[in-house]
Image (tube, rainbow, N blue to C red; front, side, top):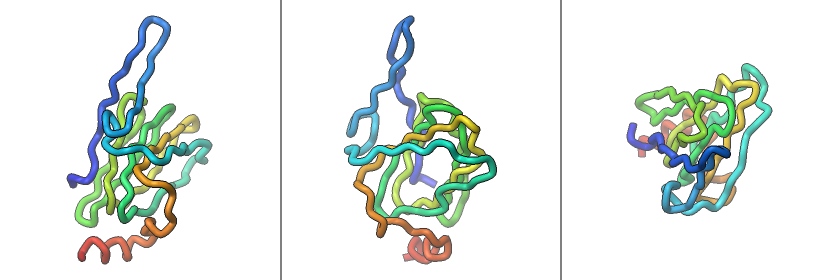
Length: 133
């Protein structure tokens, strides 16, 4: 599955602490048009359960951890995000689910487009039909 990759984010800082700068078309592989974050997810909740037709995202666990399930219709991979210096880059037409959130998990998502509800594929069977084409 080549439509995702882990991206190491360069940590800068000194004895006072650490800093990571996120810059579009530099260490983020697209121009950033939208930023949002997910937090306060209850134990046992699964989030996501969708794909995007064209949207690309970089996801960073700023605090805590969660597991991503990525599916291209042929293979599923499981990725644990638990390090704020590692981002998960997800391209279009990848089914994603997020689960096993730690109580303190804060996920930040950078996107290459503004919100567009019609970009979502929310039914897994529809997703499988679309990727066959």
